Image 1 (cartoon, helix red, strand yellow):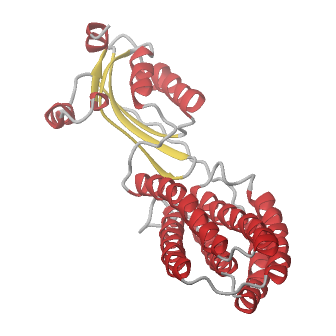
Image 2: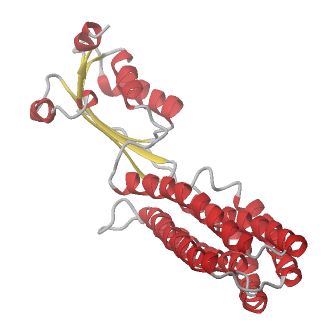
Image 3: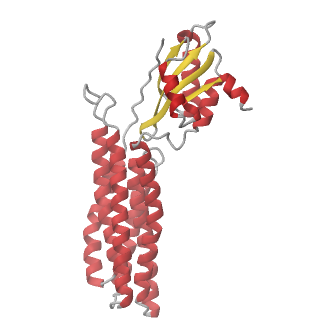
Length: 316
């Protein structure tokens, strides 16, 4: 019987989040004042986005700090999941803001107020600049962390809001169509909703210990069976502790002619790291399938729970 373990501790994105938080928090006050003074729903909705940006950035920053805590006797996997909880919370926050904007826009479409377009334009341009800087700071980390991606999406939706407010101000200035303000707010809300759902779905997949979105389970099964010295496998599980930190456990029935720990284990670990970026691996070697193999057959939930070279050959 043998086991292989490897651990990776990715660095945080604290500096980028701190700068983005400082910029966003400072501008939030100016945008709220501007929205009230100009009576623009599009600007107020943009300020609401900016508020969620500030909260989201603060939560993301706190989550990274907590996730860096070392594993202890009570939480042997560490605190990585705090980042995913933050991402899920930010997604729910975005849902709430989008729904509120749509509701408020509906009320205002029935009775559009007078809107001061010049002040609205100035505030929106400043907001656009702030959001561009914040997005630039967060862009490098959003592809590797759901937590940072949630904060990035918050800022991205707010940037779109600023663009919409600028267009809104120009249209109102030259046409006097006050209803455009509510229409653009509706478009912003509708743009945010599907992207928020994607973020929430990805976060829930991690929390429910689903197979990571970037891991092809069928291909993992195929590559395990293709490794020399492997006769069959069962009880295969793949999940992620947090973004970019996938883990795998599996029982492997090895050929009796090989030394599994010296020959098969290094091959499997190298293959999983190189082809699937799975570096936290635990493998149990057996000369014959154990009781978990019967349990996997009983579940019949996934072909990857149990597999053998004879089964693979029969499927071709």
